[in-house]
Image (cartoon, rainbow, N blue to C red):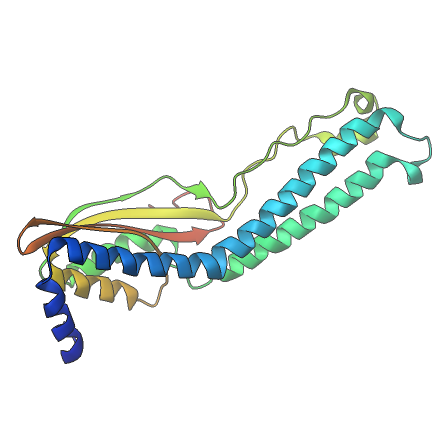
Length: 236
C-alpha cells in the first residue's frame, strides 16, 4: 500500500523524531479522537440514562416509605401513582436504549471483530501479530439495585405482582473491547491502522500505546471497542 507523497514525507519526518516525540504525538492524536467521540455520543446519552436511573431509585424509595399510609381508594393510592410514574420512566429508559442502538448502527458486529482484524493483517506486509484477544464485556451504564417489596404489600397478590424483581438486572448496550499487539516499522504499522479505518464497518479507538523494541521495529498495543445490545461474544 503506497501512501500519498505528502503523507509519506510527513511520516518520514515523523520516523526521524525521537521516541519521546513520537510517543507524545501518538498520544495527542489518540486523545483528540477519544475526546471527540466522548463529547459527541457517550457523555450526553450516558448522563441522560444515569439521570433516569436516579429518578427510578428515588421513586422506589418513595413507594416503600409511603406504603404504610396508603388510602383505601385506588385512585389516591400513593404506591399506584408511583408505579405509574415508574412505568413511564422505564419507557423513557427504553427510548434512550433505542437511541443508543441507533447510534451503534454501522458499528462492526462483536462476533466479526477478531476475524476482520486478522483479515486486514493478512493483507498488510511488514506487520507481525503478537497477540489478539477479546476483553470482558461491560455495560455502558452500571445497573442500580431496585427497592425491596414492602411488607405491607406482600399480603395482597395484586400488589405483590409489581414487586417481583428485587434488583435491577444489567441492561444494554454493551461495550465489546478487543486488544491486539503488533510489531513492525512505523510506516507499516501506520498503513495497517489506515486499512482498519478504511473498513466499511466502524469501531471506537480506546487505546494506542507505542514503544520501540529495537530500531526501527515498533510495538503497538491497541484496544478498539464496538457496541451491541447482546451481552455475549456471539460466534467468537
